[in-house]
Image 1 (cartoon, one colour):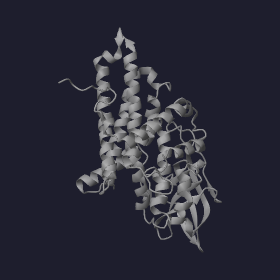
Image 2: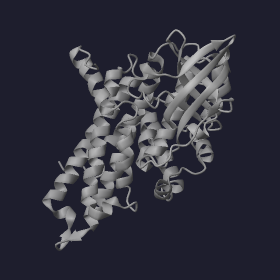
Image 3: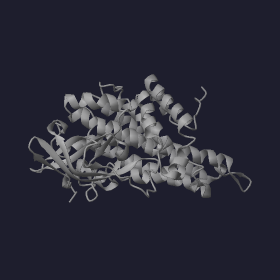
Image 4: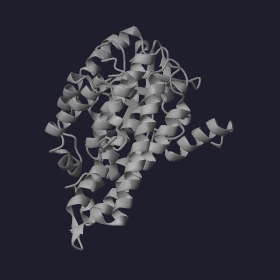
Amino acid sequence: MPFPAFDAIDPLNLEALLTDEERAVRDTVRQYLDDKVEPHIADWFEAGELPDLPELAREFGKMGLLGMHLEGYGCAGLPARAYGVACRELEATDSGLRSFVSVQGSLAMFAIHRFGSQEQKEEWLPRMAAGEAIGCFGLTEPDHGSDPASMTTRARRDGGDWVLDGRKMWITNGSVAAVAVVWARDEEGVVRGFVVPTDSPGFSAPLVKHKMSLRASVTSELVLDGVRLPESARLPAARGVGAPLTCLNEARYGIVWGVTGAARSAWRAARDYALQREQFGKPIAGFQLTQQKLVDMALELHKATLTALQLSALKDSASGVHPAQISFGKLNNVREAIEICRTARTVLGANGISLEYPVIRHANNLESVLTYEGTTEMHTLALGQALTGHAAFR
């Protein structure tokens, strides 16, 4: 009996595991990005901009990408694996695109969907799902990243209103957002969430400049100087730091899938280059050391994809997925993806640092992905606690 065909691009035939619906999501996103974004993304990265983001948001809304794993309010309500596949295709083009979709859907929209009032959901979610309103998520502060429980942004009562004062940092979408989900500590020390229209007096979002990573992405500081909000702006079901951490867990799931796209793009670029580049009279793909690099990259890429597939199955199951399992995926997949990009760079030699190829752009972007939504150290300790029963954070 003859062996089945071997696909060098998909050695384990993992794409065959996707449903027809998931393949349709994959192909729709891939076609749009190939046509509309790929020809420009290197220039956008070099210029440090993501031009006409509102129009891009509306296009993503038409494709059902914004809040696609949420139910109702104009959201697609698709399974977790379909959302993961979309994140993979977005990040295969650029991490900035996946970051935008992740912040919009898994942070800002998810926070309102999970913790908001009916009025808040009806006001914001349909517009956000359509890409007509962009959202951001204000948790990280200039002096408090891995320890959000120590946030210094304050929310105090003044009659029937709340008044917010503080600073947030490294906020994706901040300067283009119509609404910000902002986390602050009240006078009793309890962490609260607020839905803040960005045209509120006292709110500003200056751009963060001079980035060398995630350059095709809008990153801002949020400044809250006496921002006065009615009681109706408070997320009624959010109490304590566990609420924003629940949102972060949603975003981390998208990262688990997304980075496999960046790694896939770098690996394919390295393989194509090795087949074409000749040295010493033959393609460098014919040399043992190059083949070892290509094989090692393929192994880690497909193991990462298997991890993402399993987490999808858990997330879509009745029992759900444990935060430590998400930490497992985020820690492993980002670490391996960045190593794949670095190895791919060596296969391309000097060309590996050129934006004519996607490799150095993905490698630079993943330096940010490595530390946002939980650093390597924090996920190591979270997983270590789950494995041993002992907390080692302090």
